[in-house]
Image 1 (cartoon, rainbow, N blue to C red):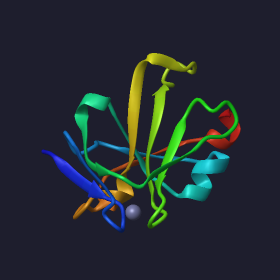
Image 2 (image 1 turned 90 degrees about the vertical axis):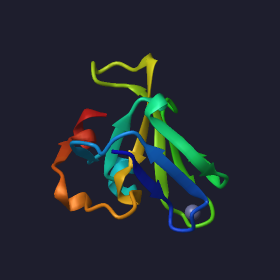
Image 3 (image 1 turned 120 degrees about the vertical axis):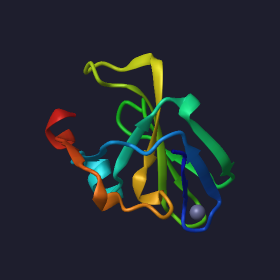
Image 4 (image 1 turned 180 degrees about the vertical axis):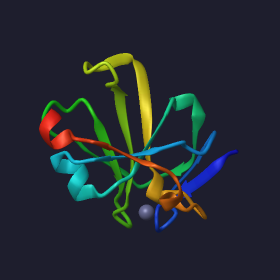
Length: 121
Ligand SMILES: [Zn+2]
């Protein structure tokens, strides 16, 4: 089932190929302040209908692109390599959508997986 999402002002609109089975909450310094619940996709499984007001924040190693809408300020999505092995795999890029932006979706209805980013990086 395709799921749609948007930032508050609709400058960012996207479709993902399927509803995530879990979302991830990360305790690292930036995620805890941004407040996102993250859903991981391959780039081919996400289509951006509009992404006109994208701004990008990068910090530390600057490997990850943390995107937000410059109009309404919503944290929209991240562009990262796959970190599942502990090392960045640039051959497996990921689009990490903020599941709080999914439209007509009860994010409280799926399990939240917590990453202890505060202590891991
Ligand atoms: Zn916006």
